[in-house]
Length: 508
Image (tube, rainbow, N blue to C red):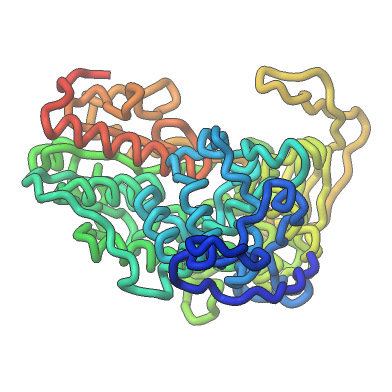
């Protein structure tokens, strides 16, 4: 993607609409300057979507620096002016955390970045994260009215700009906090659902402690998403903001081992479980136990959380020269692009459907293609091949064709007889999904779970244990960061109702 030319736009100027108040005509509109004429909707429709500046593919493919560079003030004001300020803002219907999208963009149109930041941080505990990894194209931007006649407003890029502004202007935004309620809430897991719930709950006046199994907070945000897509210091800044508001953190605390859920329930007035679904699923093909086969979960955890990407730690991880990643989602894209950055000569995706069926975000696919990732579409592995020492040497695959739609509505991939072939590879990363880890639930028999081990809840997140709520992947299965955050926000307000006696302690 070519970086867009930056328009000449002055910084927003403070002050009232003095010319308008005096009855004099306003000067021609300047994005971000409320003292100039407001553009008409026709003029807004004429503004082309502002592309996200990004680092050149040939450079970024070999390091872990962030790919996207973010908007400048000028670009943000210009893109904000594309918003039509609809009377019925359907974009909000696509946001699981119900960010006041027209509200913060209107403040940007007026040049009030501080106000936009306050508006956003009131609604969203992790805006720097969602501005980078949220699938806006199928969420808020997918519901944007402008999308009916062209590109949607770049809501995600504007969100990132405002959130990053808040991070670089420490203390500029002060959020409201309720009077202390005296109630204590435990949050199990510091991923997107847990952090969101903690932010909401502390704002409502509750005493919140997050219990995290790893040594560092962030959950999937730090162990699963690579540095080049979501820098670790960005996640830490989001966590630091919550800590500054009063959230307490206890790392190296495994609920189900360090303490049982019942023991935690004795210490707290309510609990929110947000442990994710981190147990990897494998292909169940011969040779999958050979040396050189990773689950994406393990591979990304070693590289991301344990610092193998930095070259400054002793974390053991293989550096394959021919890396093959099985899968087509965002985790697969993260893995295959990580393989390139770890020194692979070739890094390939093997996916059993076609390119149009890839579940990964379009931006991630675009970035992978630009960086040189090889895509083997309509291809399914049938065996991992190895040498006499047990090391991977290849992946036997078969070509596929799409048949009739299956239960998901997508056309079912069918093997083509006689089309088998071998891909030479020395490392295979399996990125075909995860399922629930039974560590916590196995120590709480009174907690009702599904046949697949996910926790059952009602529509507010309440489990079968009174006062115990759950959300995110441990309830819905592997999903997106923003959906987990939506669960955290919903559950936080249900917990508030429960603690303040607005709701009966009923079972799900």
